[in-house]
Each structure stands twice: as C-alpha cells, then as structure tokens.
Image (cartoon, rainbow, N blue to C red):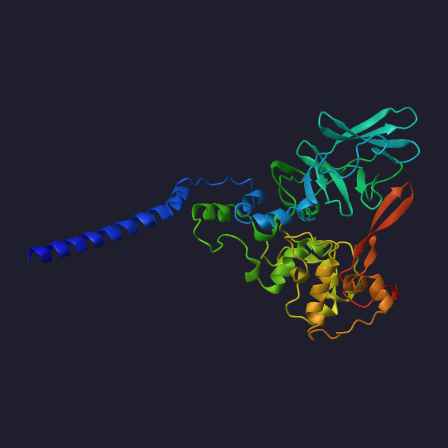
Length: 417
C-alpha cells in the first residue's frame, strides 16, 4: 500500500513538473513581447489633417514595411517636393554653371551662403545687385525639371528661375516674363496638392498662399495614398502581434473608381473646385464630391498629355473594354519603374498574349520592332509634345516638354520608325 502511494505521489510530482516547465516555456517565449508592449510609447503626429487624423511621416512606416519604404523613396512621387538643399536641388551652383541670362541686361546667379541657397538677380552691365531670393522648397523630382519656392513670412512664392532637366540648365520659370525681374508668383493650395502629402492652409480672404510651416508633409508619400496613419502606426506598435491592418486605407478594399480617383486627383488636369478646400480629399473618397473635370466625354482625345493621364486613359479602348484596368494595373507606386519597358511590356502582354485583347499579333515591321527593342509603350503610348507645358530655354525660344501619352492606341508614325 505504501509503495502504491509513493508511486502515485511521484506521478503527481512529475505531472506538476511538466506543467511548470510548460508555463516557464510560455513565459520565456512571450517575454520579449511583454517587454515590447510595456515599453510602448506613442509617436506624436507631425501634422494634423483637417479631419482630425494625424500624419506620422513615411519613416515610421519603415518599422514594418522596410522593403517598400526603401524602394518608394526612390520614386518621382516621393521626390515631388522637399526642403531645398544641395542634395535636393538638381541645378548646379558651380562657377560658370550657376548663371542664367534672362536677357541682354539681366542675369541670375545661384549661390550658397552660410549653407543657404539663393537666386540673386543682377544687372549684367555693372554687376549691380537687383534682388535676392532664398531656395526654401523644391517642387518636382527632376525627371522633367524643378521649380523652387521661397517663404515670405508664412506665404509661399515661386522663384523666377527653374531647372530644366533635358538641357541640364537653369531657365526662366514657365509663364514668367523674360524682359524683367518679375514679382514672385504666389503658390496656392491646389498647386501644392499635387506635390505634397499635406500642407495646412492658414489662408485669409486677402491671402490664399499662406501656410503653417510646421504642418507640411513633403513629397507624395505613404500617407497620401493610405490616409493619415498616426493611429495605424501607434495601434500596431502597441499591438505587435495583431497582423490585421487597422486604421489605414487598404486599396484592395476600394472599388475600381475609388482607386482611379486617388490618382485622378492629380492626374486629371484642371478641375473645377467645389466648396471643399485642397488636401481635404482622402484616398477612398469620391473625387467628384470635391472637384469636377473641366472637360466632357467628347473632349477626351484632344486633352493635353501633360497632367491629364486619367482622361486620356479613360478614352482608350484598353480601358473601355476592361472592368478592372486602373492605374496600378501597370504602375507600382512603391517602385521607380521609369524606363523599365520590359516590365511594362509584360503588363501589355498579360492581356494581349492571353487572348483577352483584340490584337494578339504586333503589326509593326520586324525592323521597327528591333529598333524599339520590342517596346510596346514606345509605339502605343509614344512621347508627345505638350500643348501647354513649354519652357523658355533662351529669350524668345520656347521648347515644348515631351510627355508620354496615356491614350493607348496605334500610332502610324511610331510604327514606321
């Protein structure tokens, strides 16, 4: 009897030991998470949207999405605006390369003084100083060119000298006179809306170009397409084991039109603004509730290639015959795909080589296909001179900027090249 009680007690002790070891294993397994949760501290927003949601800044996204962040910061979208410095300004400040001759009498000199960049206007006859303006903000990735803004108290103005990438030179800003040093052009919210993620307006009825300097989110970054994400970042830092994305716009949950509208905000040309102010639109909203296009269905094929990619795409047969085609069908906003025609070819061939499209065989000559390196885009979405975007490369000489058309079609001139 004693032996039986002893064996029973031993079994209980062994069972208790197994339970204890299991508990210890779970504690040590989850200990890092407990410490992580205990050490959580919320990130303060860098700007507050008019809807009350906070912006965190794309660097916070890198905590969980490092690969996407690293490729996105190399895109033209991300580089569409920035604080001005020698790294972000494309034009040269070297001697002899830093001069722009506006006309026979007036010149501009780009200089660096105490780590601040300036445009100085001067009389060429005696080098007399006329005016000086700081480079404060860069507008444009530099793919086609860049313009520059300066702060004057809380107001933003465009500088007279611009950088033009095709000629690698300083030029007169589009629309500025070439016979005089002009008054700086005020920059309104609609201009910034297509180059920044957010800018808080402090406009008054007499000054529509006034902003709060501390409430600027530069570039078209993660939160422009996924909405102000301070709540999202803080939730997942506090709850690291929760893998369901919370408090963020998920484009997979949006309709085709909602996804198109997110791009059309800036890629559908001039739009008539309704009562809602710039930057009030958030991805997932219906764009026509905020602004309406200034063109009709019959105007689509005559739209300018600069700035209205959405209108041209919507006039294309590829778009009309598809229920799913949208901007991100071909463009990955997380990557710099410029000049990667092989990747774009694959997008075209995914429909046209599968029998989905109406034309499965390229009708270009073998020589033409060889010369274009079998580049579908070069023939069916050729570079086209803009009717409205023209750069004054020298006094009285205007050069139209080439932009790739998004009116997908068969272009006879391209096929014969």
